[in-house]
Length: 234
Length: 234
DNA sequence: CAGAATCCCATTCGATACTG
DNA sequence: CAGTATCGAATGGGATTCTG
Image 1: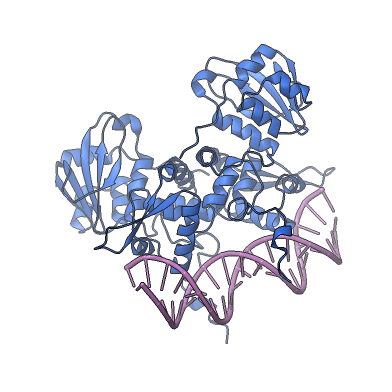
Image 2: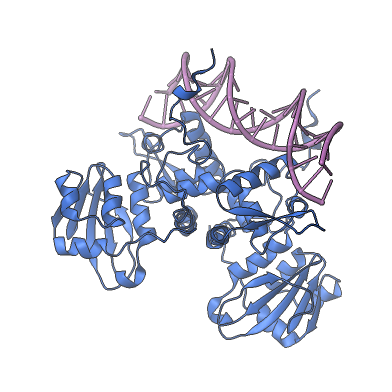
């Protein structure tokens, strides 16, 4: 007596996508794909390169193994994430964005730029290294940036990235530390916010042991000057 | 025996915002604000001007009164929506975006632009008049648009808008029908997608009774030519 | 019409335990 | 380490009812 299964609202197709809104609007479809809890943050964490399950789990504090598994599966099915098995020695798997998945960055940036203007936004909460690096890509002033070409190394909480500033663009990739013209090294992300967005003096933050700048310090200052938060509203 | 209330995880504050992710990232905060089901679509429906409860409910097929009430309350608390009571005769209320709420449009556009490139996106589903007008604002080619100044009237499913094309920008507002240099009038939104993005011949769609173009038809064609969907990926 | 209140079921989530 | 399996608790959301 529970066999009608087939007589429900729609024949069969909308099993995973199109679950919620029956709407041709692209934004509605986007929210079907990435509107579940945690999905957007998983994409964010993969935006600078593939990670392993446990890396993701460590970055997304509060997510359970179950939910992470479910979200990765649904992002994979949506074509946003792929999984790649590492060669035999390391039995581990890597999750990474598809080409299209990487194209979500502008949407992520606009969401972040918008939300950061809310008076309710609390920048004192923890921040992952990837978040911080993505914030730089979001908050850079492209006009100022065009006047500066450089390779900048940033190491936060032991994760190293290199930003290659060229012609106003600034791709960021994971890297070995020590590759750049200048190196920022910080045990935690939050003090970096003070340096890059609050324009706290370098020396002060260095004196607190929250930052070490190596290499071209004049360049470091010019680099920092490229970034600014949007004004708050209201 | 249920009075501990104060001994929970955090003192008190994170009662509504900061509920899910403890994350300083702007994108994470955005998802706290608008990541609940329906929230983003409510914002979308308000993007071209305030609406009443029942208007919203009619546009968002499938939403229940309870959920709409809850979402409006939480959007109001987040500072994205305000409610305004109409003068005595009309006892009704109007929900509209705050100044900051309107600033969410670029994020909505980027999400839509991105999702529309998915092979899984189905443009055959129903589309609200607001969705359609916002899609025009998203998919316009700004360079082409700079060469055309015009006032275009679009009436879809009985809802009228006017798009004022000037200097490459195209603000859209609700209006009385018949204000423009040219008027598009369509009983349903979907055939308009074929005209604007599929470049179906005007006459064909008109012959099917799905569209009536009044006024400067040459302008109508030039106008249509400003819009194109992004390429699919994969 | 606009929305609050109640009821109740379905889903989701987190914690724990388990497996290759 | 990378998940899967299970279970109880919390949440979400639809249907209905009630009120100004």
